[in-house]
Length: 220
Image 1 (cartoon, one colour):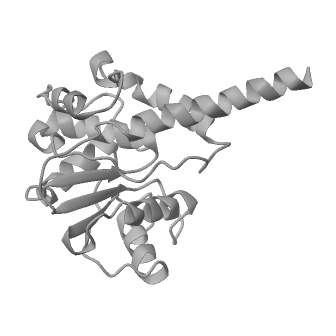
Image 2 (cartoon, rainbow, N blue to C red):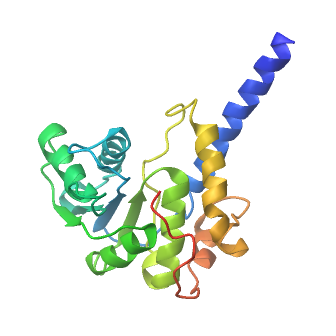
């Protein structure tokens, strides 16, 4: 009985790793050029300092930087209640605690994932690659929203370093279940992944889609 329970628990953990990994790696390729934008999406944060989730997202964003002197980091997220904006809390943590001294832009008006994308689009116009950072399902949803709003920019999407094997290990099955639920608001074709995330798959994924805000455009 204990052996069976152990096997079942291991299977659940493996499934959580696999599910999150697949969403984090799609789309898997982007075009030529060195100028990049790393977009870090905020999580609701009523406290006066960046909470655990936002601190992790900042770290994941900074480790996603590939070309430091050609990368702008964009923190996106408005205020929760009367507190400071998520974007400003994350930017402050990146600079004062983690010592990031590269270019930082702040978008501090968004209250939903759809608004995150709408409001950062003007900051993405002249970059060659775009990396969106969050928990894998949330980042995947944001990439779909970019595809709906600006398919030409969606063609520049590349993976961020927001998935690492063993990180959040025990929580990944729960994150996957939450992700499955949160992605139900997308169209079936938008949720579908190719057999393997590669250049051909990315190219077809970035085809134009209907520009509309989904009913499920809520903050994750």
